[in-house]
Length: 473
Image (cartoon, rainbow, N blue to C red; front, side, top):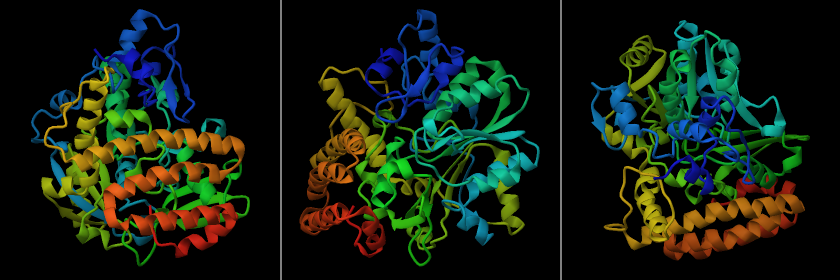
């Protein structure tokens, strides 16, 4: 059986912190060598190990998403791709300024704010800028003021933990809306089942559609290429909207001592989500895309009829009728643009993610079980049957890229030499491109080589020139 001991030993702890909360801190969660949070099981007693394992999202001793969904939403229809659902929507805020300041259509923060304003919750638990920068740029925060929360919205792609924030609010008598990625919400659900105090306090679970979780090095790597060195980095904006471009062609912004610089994300090594650079290892074993244990899940409506709008549009999977009514009432009042969409539409927004999380997971489970390694029980088989050999090779190469990115960036950061990282990743990404795009690899390799030479000439020069690059990554 794949228990929490195997999860930690194999390096697939996602750092959610549920184990720390469940054991009153006797399982510490700290930042590991790969710049993400990890549980430390050294010296933990047998009873605490079993309690921790029952709330670990990657342990076989915990309930899976299907079981949790059947308990929480027993009367709702179920689809194997997206979980249970009561309402399926695509929409965005009509307030242009608010939508512009959000990563997508602005509805994740809008729904959370409505729950706060209406008194359904007393505060929101969400990721924002960290007060203690020794733990990274971002951390979970408690916000009970609507205006303050509105100022802190936007997607933040960085490893965090729930450990401290849940321990801090437990037993304070207030009700909360928790925003998080699928594995974090699954862990919080499991924790709420075992801890009636927290169970009564966590009133709404708001999920974020997830491709994979990034380590803290992701922000530093992109910012360094944009001209802001890691030690000078003060803030980042992962999703700067660009008027006139499709909504999936956004910029990356980094703030340092000389102000903010913006660079097209696609021009940066690591900027392509498909390469999985800086992905934490746990994500290789996750099959939950639409936050199936959440009351409502939000993602990007990556469909042609929506991506043409640079302002962004959310895809939404709701699992509570009162949230369906909230959205429909706001649309009727002219506050939202809202379309009801089909299950197939919702699934189509994450086609690439399904290839990674479902097809790719079958490959990874097959490879690891063949090698005699412990893997968690998942909802897809450990098999290569029916999978295109090209897809198998892409999955394996993506896994190598992810592993190598952590190691190469750590060495480059220690040496103060960004080019060291770029040189290490170039052949791996080039090999991936040869399989993925065939004849286009020559243009791709040339673009990467030119970029590496420019990086050697000075990061600030790259930031100024990056806008003119043809996206190659």
